[in-house]
Structure formats: structure tokens, C-alpha cells
Length: 225
Image 1 (spheres, one colour):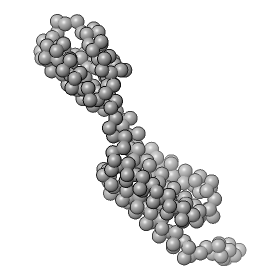
Image 2 (cartoon, rainbow, N blue to C red):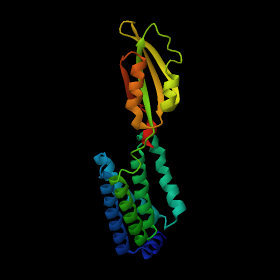
Image 3 (cartoon, one colour):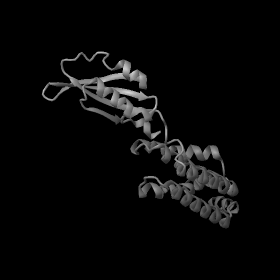
Image 4 (cartoon, rainbow, N blue to C red):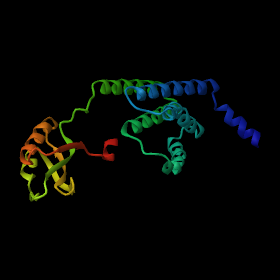
């Protein structure tokens, strides 16, 4: 009985077709890895993963005889170890989905479809990266640290000024510095126009007696998405 099962399974297997699809998956995986490395930070282990991920997905899909629903269910079992991996950025996530899409297409036998959409995605990503699309936003989050003499009432002192240059303004922290002779106010502000940052700093300096003013980026995990 076991021999009959093996023979019936082998009848549906075209060895050369499997080799052709597997080779295409590897080559397209290399394409994904090369595009991901273009003007981007990466680790060797992630690049290797992008290269072999298409053929792994393809193998699972072919193993379940092209049943996408069953294949995705099998691949979903690997999410059980998701808690052990570090969350990646948007670029990493898009590359992973791209690799998985290639594996799904080749596993279903749509080799030409995998070639066409991979070439299209590669061209679009390279063009967007070269043109720095979306990188020159005029709106920016800033953390403002303003020093004032300790005898000045800081309540609503800079509110009117900050509202002229930004929105979503809030006073995050107040602390004393320089042995208690100065106070430091830390504001969160979302600037209306990043090009007006120097103008804002100059306006604050005229109001706080030319004491130190520090404008820095806001550290946030939202930058990963």
C-alpha cells in the first residue's frame, strides 16, 4: 500500500519543472536581496533569509499540491516562534512580503507572473529610493529644551509663540539646572514647517534672554513603520 502511495505521488511530480521553479525562486530571491541592500542598512543573516525564503514558501505550496489555503495555514504555524524575533522596519517587512509572494507564485506554477511582478516591484523600489520619495516632509516632531531664569513664571510663557510655528504642543517636563539658578522646560511640538525651525529658535532666544535652546528629534518607534 505504501508503494502505491509513493508511486502515485511520483506520477504527479515533474522533476525538471521543480528544478526550474526552484532555480527561478532562488534567482528572484537574490533580486529581492539586492534591491533590499540598495542604499539601506542590513545584516547578512537577513539577506540570506530573503534569498532562501521564496524557495521555502514554494516548497510548502508544492507540498500541499498547490492548495494556497492549506499552504498558508502550514506557514502560519511558523508564527509560533514570532515572539523570539525582533520587530523590523517597514523596508524589512515589505521585502519579506515580496519574497513570500514570489514563493507563492512559483509554488502555484505562475512563473511568468512571478518574473513580471518582481521586475516591476524592483524598478519601483529603486526609483523611489533614488528620488528619496517621501523623505522631505515639511512637518516634523521636535523636542524643545528651553532654559529660563528660575525667578520667571514659566506657565504659558511660550505658548503663544509656539502655536505660531506648530501644533500639538505640550509641556513635557520642567527641571532645575545650573545649581538651581536656571529652569529647563521641555516641550513637545509638531512643527508646521521644518524650514522655520531656526526662525523659531531665534524667536525663543529673544524671549528667554539668549539662554540655551536645544531642538532635537523625538525618539519614537513610529519611525519604523
